[in-house]
Image (cartoon, rainbow, N blue to C red):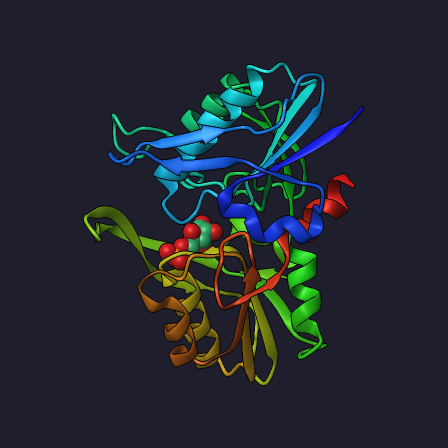
Length: 288
Ligand code: R5P
């Protein structure tokens, strides 16, 4: 069966891993709405659509929905989407009555638009690690960047102790330790509700040791920055940071350096100066 790989404008730099990929035509109408055209007929083909949904997650999700629907309408034999960083994955439950559980909404939308499998990296709400999972009816193939990130940092710190800043990312620490992250009260950040990290609890000793902290993402950096400080205060020799997705909001990358991080690396699921791991290579490894 012929495979057709389609690349959106946000995934253009993945073309090296998929030299025969076809680019989706994308334009903006004068009012800001998106024009999408799939330039090759998808009928009977195994279609893999590759699209980054960050930055501008709302815009890029709409583009994803339009592309999927346009492909589905041509009756491909199968339709998968590779979205290396899935936006809204952290909104996977409601805390206050009436809140949208956005992660489920997005998954239901993707499923209803014909996406038979979403392929993504270290999806926040999947705490079991790499493999095939189901969420809100959507089949999700979760690929983990943990091995690649750790291999990269172990070149510099071979004997480093690997830890995750919370239980949620413990699978990424590959048998290492996990700290307990205690969140504070709900507050405001950039007009949105946000729970700051109040403290970390750890029942292990880092004195004189090199440590690698690994997590699924650095967003505002609250988690990673505080974790670095706690470990440095605990006497760690060098602290390295690894995260699959580097959003690095509010100058988080610079703040990590100020906090004492030796180096911070992530995957290119999001374009950033700290990207060292190629998401397209991980995808190729996972699906051939
Ligand atoms: C939380 O459970 C996640 O694994 C990350 O630790 C968190 O989302 C990172 O966000 P921030 O950088 O804003 O602390």
